[in-house]
Length: 196
DNA sequence: TCGCAGATATTCT
DNA sequence: GAATATCTGCGAG
Image 1 (cartoon, rainbow, N blue to C red):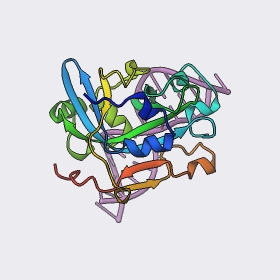
Image 2: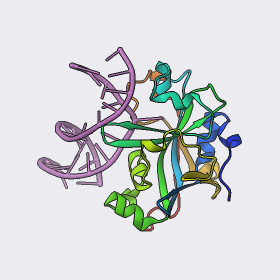
Image 3: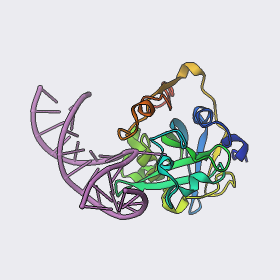
Image 4: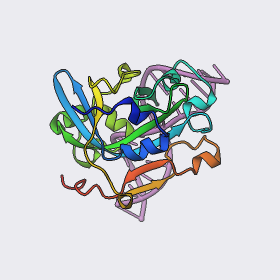
């Protein structure tokens, strides 16, 4: 099958964030498969980005970002929410892409069960996405190129006209110049999002 | 339909 | 002890 390899992730973070749109995120858990198409992502560029966790130096929590690309960086915030990131750029560069939203494609019923909700609210936020796919900190450091448990596949692409760019969300603590950086990418018209 | 405040646990100072 | 890359519920319009 076509799990995306390290060569895809080991590039410029903004490029990876942009090209991740339209890719399929697949999760295998307890013999069942759930998946969804990525429609929103944000880039966090460690060294020069005050919004990135790694900008304040290496800690035990963000150590994964300093490792090789193609690895999952999962962390906890607000006491109840997990978030899924993918490490990018060559090893030693603490950069990552935060996945903010997906459109469910397989295992929708199971996701609704895990979320206790359905429809558009199913996985249109970083924490919702993790809950829908049963992602928790146990997957921190997981190798996404192995094709096990959690990985990315080719699915479809989006033309530039369908992709919007803008400032990132929830990083008011960052320096103004980083706050305003248009490093968030999302699909303006997925086409079938309102179908359900 | 929109905007605001509370919740909850891990991490860092 | 304080802060956090959020979500949900509630109340008013």
